[in-house]
Image (tube, rainbow, N blue to C red):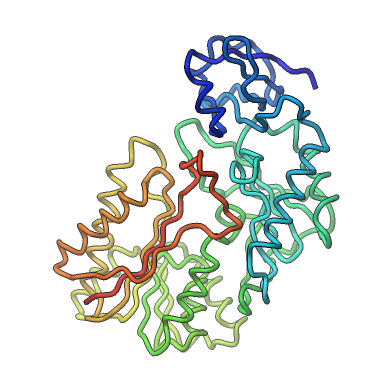
Length: 398
């Protein structure tokens, strides 16, 4: 591949040398007309700083692949990164009775913009930059060569807009290699079974980043009345029921997600008719519970991202405070609130501040008993704090 040299604006090379993988268009002195995916060398005063790929359609003009001038960006390079990620997964995460995990986590694995989730032998791939399009065949070959027992690869490409960092993930999938994935892929997670809609479901079809937190809920739910808000396909709900919850009430606005949650209960030997499912607005349901005087021992809040752009951050923080305040209004004394945020632009400090404000306004004293972030298959490089998006706190009413 031909390499184009791009000069950085004065003083910006320091961030790249430290390990940050993004270069915004305004950080470049001059941008020639070059095609998406073109390999570029970023220089400062003519000296090499980093090498990456170019995206003419994004505010992030270059995503860095290496800071080693001796490394060529080719098939061997991508294969090395895929194999390294796989080795790290196998050494760092507990795959006991678990067959699904994130194989490639973009910037965290040195392949910015590339996400690949493995579901029981099927890889589901999303490329988040037009600059990655020329590399798709190389990534496919690297997956085929590097992943043992690979059944097939399903593509779910959706290039996001410049001002948005979380996509809705609703585009239909396309088989790129191997045998066709079933409409719903059955996976195993800590002994539980879930059906994943990898073709049309949100993101790649399931939220693997909450795996360890779902297992935590299984341990905490025994003998409790549980309310799972924004329940999606029932991951937390199934675990609560498997953990011996007294009752489980699942609420999600999407009727298809509620239908899949019911099916997931049945798959796990849990009679769906013994549990409550409702396709409705979470905020309205919480209000109706409060009016009825209905309360719960464990409330789970796992909403979609509230801040999808920088402009929305303050509104998101206010939204988290409001949601948690309302939930605390129906939490029993001594009960547990498990609350999450997947908004990358809302920092852990800001999210905790929103929960603290909710506690104050609801007149409920809370003690933090668990504080969690992303699991090891969603690594965060220290020089890329933007990658630390998931916050998950368990608090007890005291």
